[in-house]
Length: 122
Image 1: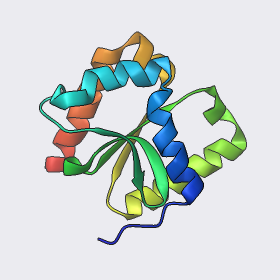
Image 2 (image 1 turned 60 degrees about the vertical axis):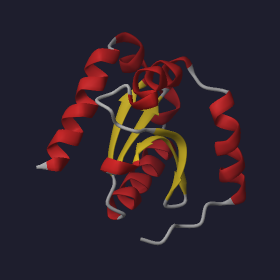
Image 3 (image 1 turned 90 degrees about the horizontal axis):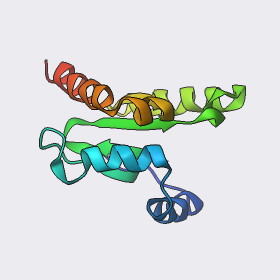
């Protein structure tokens, strides 16, 4: 499958982002990095289909997005919906978690990720 172009400003943003992670991103990253979650390999700030996704497991075509309060605004909701459709059209499964879910219940978040991948295998 050919790669979609990523805008130069998005690519620059992706390079900068790993240096500045939110508390929720850091907590999830510590749970999934280095094959810690069922041996799965995740990447962070990965360019896919012209977007930069928070976390991706390429082997299972799974994207994990973390959302903060800025995602409750109408414009952000519409953008997220369009983005989700585009990524799904390229064969990716996308799941979203609120930052608060990560901070308060990381175990169930990880369990949900595992279950989602298990469902995709069926």
